[in-house]
Structure formats: structure tokens, C-alpha cells
Length: 196
Image 1: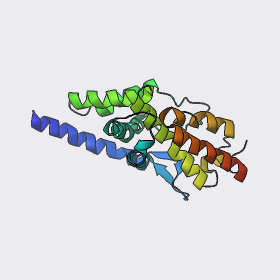
Image 2 (image 1 turned 180 degrees about the vertical axis):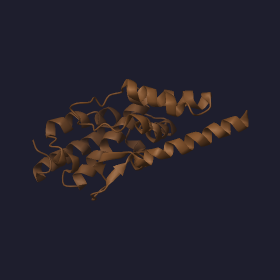
Image 3 (image 1 turned 90 degrees about the horizontal axis):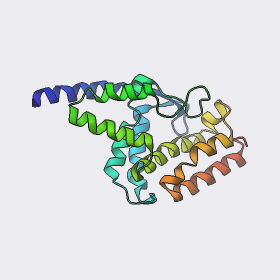
Image 4 (image 1 turned 180 degrees about the horizontal axis):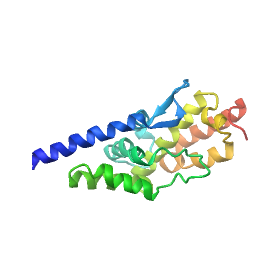
């Protein structure tokens, strides 16, 4: 039984290496290189560790870290959907659910069920942990775009109202971080790197 579990765990580890090849639209800070999903997930987990004291409520930090490390694994099958895409919804899709079942299903049942539940909790963004994790997920690309003279905002013609609407959910996880983010958005408008 243990040998079978180990085999499945190793297969999962090899499968999720594919996350390193999924490119996001955003670029690394002060760079013209696109970030990959693995870099993004690692950065969010580290951000959560550093910024946990800014959460609106007490959080289970380990659960937040798990959410952030696995939240984009489904993109191995489903691909990355640009948050400002007007053709395809960025919300949870049947395609992503199938990907979660397949990829996490490689693991032994107990681990698979735990990770699917954590992934679903993140997607539903109702718990304190999910709200804070989502705040991290929305903050990082904002910081990246501000460091890259507008980055994907400029590249894809995304305006202030669209960005503001997507970023305002940061407030649900952390009011202080939202206040910082809102100020950064306004400064980006003043600098001309985000069009109002």
C-alpha cells in the first residue's frame, strides 16, 4: 500500500512540473520575460507569509500557502486565462474542474480529496483563507504591471475601470493592502501607464 502511494505521489510531482511551462501574460518585475505559473505560485506563497499580519481576520496560514501553491495547477490542462479576457470567463469552468480531478486524482485518494477541496475553497473565495489568498493573487500582477510601465494594461489596452473592478476584491482579504493597491492604481493613472 505504501509503495503504491509513493508511486502515485512521485507521478504527481512529475506531472506538476508542467506548471513551469505555462506562461502568464504578466511579466516579471522590471522585465520583458513572461512569468510562468510555478514562479507565480511560489511568489504568492511567499507574499502570504510576509503579509499575513495584514489579513482582515485570523487565517490558517498553512492553508493559504497550500491554496496559493496549487491554485493554478489546473492550468496544466485548462491553460491560463487572462484576467481581462473578454471572450473567456476567468471564473471557475468545467474544464478546470475536470483538470483538478485528473491532476489531483493522480495522488492517493486522501491527498487528492484534500487538495481538490482546498482548490475548490480558493475558487469559491468565501472563507477567510480564500479571501486572503485571492488578495495575494490579485496584488502580484498589479505590482508587476506598475513596475513595467503598465505591462499588460498597456499591451492589451486594459483601462482603469477594468483593473479597478478586478483588483477591488483585495479589500475582502486585506483592507491595508487594498488601500496600498488603490493608491498604486491612482499613481499609475497619474504616470500615464494606466488609462482612465
